[in-house]
Length: 559
Image (cartoon, rainbow, N blue to C red; front, side):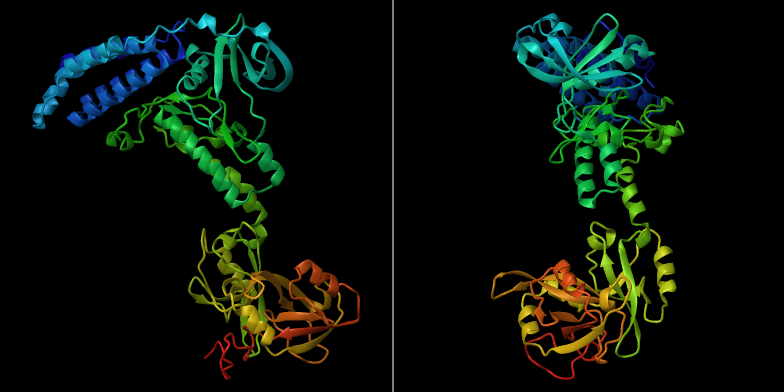
């Protein structure tokens, strides 16, 4: 191990790690990034696991940091360029040795350091105005209302009079921070990030007794309120929210920041679904990816990036490795998606976590069958395209025909995070949803009449119904068809009725095109008897109406 480089790097890290409140946030960020790269170089050097490509990636990444600073603040870029040149001089000898060992063309590291410093001189950008020219004065703000207050400080909605501009003003007392580094962290983040899913900062400064932060005003709600009020969220909504959260965190990680306090109360949602991540007070600087080229070493970094024992954030949302004070990295996000879907799982507990209910019915062949009678919108069952009236032939490859309902429940409860259902492909609801020619077959199919007597209970006349959408080729539009889902009372005229039979008339009134609610009004008229005109299409019949235009005889599901 080159002793000279090790000693110089140790001194370099010690000197550059000093925090100064006299520099602006972008300069602090650049210094932190440079120190992290130097520490990684030193660690790999001591473990003798460094290679020439690691060195090239580090320098390329830091040159990308310098290029970014040139656009934001040339004065910061000037200071960074000089410090980066010192770092390159220290590691140059080691880098050349590694290149010779790998038998690759050696780089002129001193020339690279000189080029970084000379780049600013060649561009000769104008000197930026001092901060005092654009930092607003507190007397220019008109307090509109208090938005909230917490352990760190208070947040107000205020109008900036000179520009007639509404913004959020955050005031934090100076004695709230144990370290200066903590006080400036959100300002450091704001000086670098620029993403539509992260809250925008306009200005940060301090007054006599407080730190002041001017941010954009977000006219939305925090997700904690939304989840609490809605009880559960649809999977599609959760996916949209998580996609925006991932894009926000990806931007932060690539810019070299760990948020460390991701939770639903730190995410605001606007009308229309846009999500904004807020509160960067607990953020930690990590190694960024600032090169235009994809650096493979960045994505192969070990999860033991930090081993400092620091713990920040809200305990229920912390990743386990942070709670146990183990090494961690940028992937330690915490259970954010779980919090969005947890209430949904509570609401689905009566459906055994899969979002469907089932019934057991005795078919015309005297065998028992299990079928789905209801699928909850947004549930795992719906996403797996399980449909009402699907006949379940097997659960996890185990036939359901001999199973009593208690055994079916036990199999579902004991199946763990997933279950495999084998269903009959020719259930009526499924055919209605998939075939465009079925309405013509239904209209020409033979009809039967079933007379039912009124009875008490949940279902009038002992039957339940559902409406299914099917396509009418003649009308060129979707129409609704009423299907029987429950048939629990025997018919007065002894005609069979099974789940899956289609209802065409109720007491002579055609129900084609009616929604379920309209058909239920006809069944709730309070008559002692009701006459249903049906088409025998249930899969539980031995013979049902053929589902093709060729009127074959003797065709059944069994054959």
